[in-house]
Length: 395
Image (cartoon, rainbow, N blue to C red; front, top):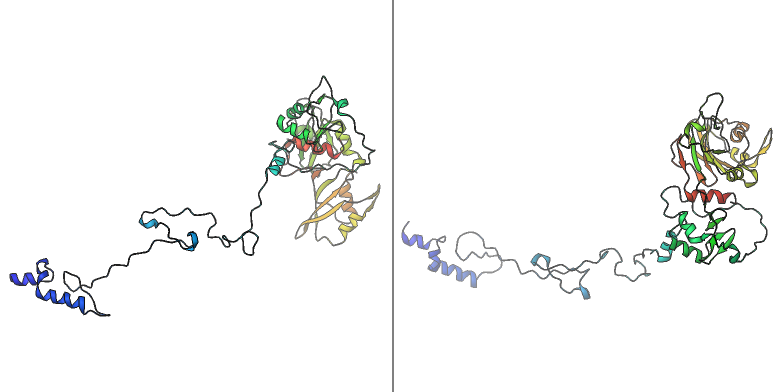
C-alpha cells in the first residue's frame, strides 16, 4: 500500500485531516437525522455509542424529607442516610390509633418488672413457680389486730434478716415487702422495719406464702414405680420406699398417704408430722389428680355418673372432676380429680361402672405436680413449693 493510502486509511490516526473524512464528519454533524448512525471520530465502520446521560442523585422516597429531597448516592462515595427501623412496614408513617397504623407494642413498666422480681423466692433455681397461693376455704373467727409492739422480741432477729436468710429475697427487697404490708408474723401484718422475731417460734408469711424457717424439715417427691410397696420396710422382701432413699442418713420420713403396689406416681415424703396429718385428714379435702387407663370405647354419661356419686360397700363416693384426655383404638385415657382418701377408691369406682382400671398413675397432690420427673427418682421440693403446700392445709 502506498504512503498516501496509508495516510487515508480510516484506521490510521494520521489520516484525520483527510478531505474524505472531513466531509463525512461535516455531514454527520449537520445533516444527520433520526435513524442515521454517527460514526466515531477516527472513522471506521463500527457504530458510535452515545454516552449515557448523567444520572440524577439517588433519592429514597421513604426517607427523603419533604417527600423528595435528594440523598447522597452510595454509588458515588456518599454515605446513605440512616435507615429508620420499620420504615418500609405498612402504615409506618401513620399516626398511632388511626386505621392502618401499626399497633404499639405493650411496654412492661418498671412497677411490673419490680413486682415480678420481688416475688418471694423469685430467684430460686429449683422447684416450680405455682403462682398465687390458694388457701383452703375454712371458717375462721373475726380477725383481731394485735399491736406490732407485742410482736416485737427484743432478743430476736430483725424480720428482714430472717426473711433474707430463708432465701425470700435480698434484705433490701425484704424491707420493701415489709413496708408494702406483704408480710405477716403470727397472722398479723407487719409494716415496721424495726420488728424483731424469734426464728424458732415465729410463723412468717409473704404474700400468703409460708416461710419454713426450720432447716431440719425435709420435703421430697417420689415418683413410685409399679411393684413398689408404699412402706419403709417390707417383711416379705418386696421393693419398698427405703430402697430409693438410702441417701437420707437416718432421717425418719413419713409417706403422705399410700399407693397400692400396682399404682404408680406421686408420693410425698416428709418428716413434718403436722403437715402429713393435715394432708391426709378428710376435713382439709386436699385434691389428688389421677390418670386412668381403661378399655374403650368409653360411653357418654359414665363421667356424669362418677361425678354424681357411686354407691360402694363403705358408702357413696364421687369424683370432683372428670376429663377425657386421649382415646386410641381399644384404650381410653381419663383424668379424674378427687379428695377422698379411701383405700383403692379410684379402682373401686371404675369397677363399679364396668370399666376395670388397666393402669393408674397419680400425677398431683394438692399444688404439687409430678411434671416430667423420672420414674423411680426422688427430688427435693423447692421453698416456694413447700410454702404452697403448707398454705394449702392452713399452715
